[in-house]
Every structure is written in structure tokens, then in C-alpha cells.
Image (cartoon, rainbow, N blue to C red; front, side, top):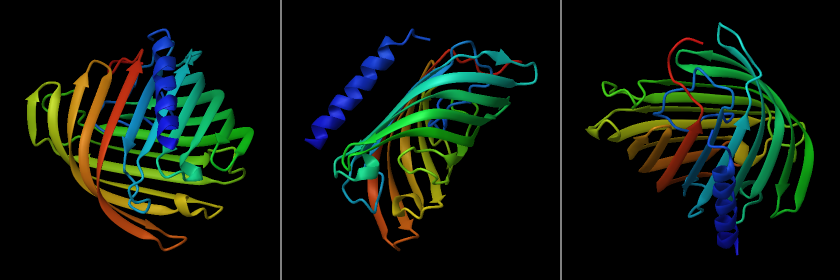
Length: 278
């Protein structure tokens, strides 16, 4: 039943993204892709991450998808923009954990500062969240500060050490009202082999950490890992297929786990221009 629900939700997201007029999520997910540093009038993106990516939730396949459409209503010559947006995020898993099975819609706005290698944003929105396993549903205001920076993107044939980091802090979920959450991620890769300008084999190491003020077990953890991935670039899309060994420690419960994992990541953005002047 849960597997069927995952399939239906992902299919719905794909249909929705296809219906957008082919024209920035809170945190871009692709580690090798260069930042969108000169947005046009209707910036947007869709991404999906799927894999057994939590060692403490053994054999649990988690799939997360996000789609966002924005409109740039103000852009300054020094890289500031104001972007109202609407978004839809869906997460589902095969084990039925409440926090992994949810849908959240948001409508709000974001003040962005675009720089040569990344972006810092301050945003707020009205969000509605449905966690269907525990029948928890709630709407409310969300607010956050986040950033994304990347270096030596794989789109540059001379790059050898692609990497990225992102972080988000704020009130991110209506169901967990008044819960301040902070998340941070760092990834560093090295190009082991390039087949051509669009395909490469990249060994990498990464670490994810998160904490919150309500001490939920699943949001207080550190998760380092190392692996290898095949990366394919095509226009404004990036696909990553890989395997890695992950270790996870949850501070509240003391729960630990480690396992070999596989993952598939896909990112597609529209109306981006990389480089140039603002």
C-alpha cells in the first residue's frame, strides 16, 4: 500500500512539473551543478532524491520530491532579488515512519543575495502540511534563512574537485509548530574519470548534520558517508546515480547505524543563466 502511494505521488509530481510553462528551491540538491546566479523572470526547479539513505531506518527506501515556481519582481544591479514563489514538496518511504510521509504546499516570498559561487536567502511563507501516517495536518507561517555554495562545477571540463555546501535554519514545518530546525550539508568530490563533457565518475565524501529545539530524534543527528557516483549533465539537468557507505548517529536516543546505500538524484531547473553580470 505504501509503495503504491509513493508511485502515485511521484507520478503526480512529474505530471505537475510537465504542466509548468517550461520555464530555486530552498536548497539546491545537486552537488556538482553550478549555482543559478543570474535569475530570469520565472525561476523554478524540480528535484527528486531516492534511496535507502538512513542507516538507522534500516532497509527503508525514502523518496523526496520538490517543485517550485517563482517570479522575480525586483532585481538590483548588485545581485539582490525579491521572488514570490509557490512550492510543493512530497516525501514518502517504505517503512511508514510518520516524519517520512508528508506533503507540504507553500506560498510566500524570498529575498535573495546572489554571489559568484552561490546564494543566501531570507524567506517566509504560509505552508500547509499533511502527515498522512499519523493523521497530522496543520497550516501556518514558516520562515527561514538558507544558503548554497558550490565550487568547481562539473559543467566546466577543467574542474577536478567539485563540491558544495548548503544550510537552512528556521521554522520549516507547520506540524512541528514553534520548532526551530537547523540543517547543514557538505560534500567534496574528485573527478576520477571523464567520459566526455557531460559524463563523469566522481568519488566523494559528505556529511549531513541537523538539530532542533524540540528534540525530535529524527532531526538531531550527524550522518557522514563516502562513495562514488556517475554524474550526467545535460543542459539544465543533472542526474546522479551512486553508492556509498553511510554512518548515522542520533544524539537524542543514542541510536546508531551504518550501511551500504544506493541512490538516484535528479535535478532540473528552468530559466537559469550561469555566470555573467547581474
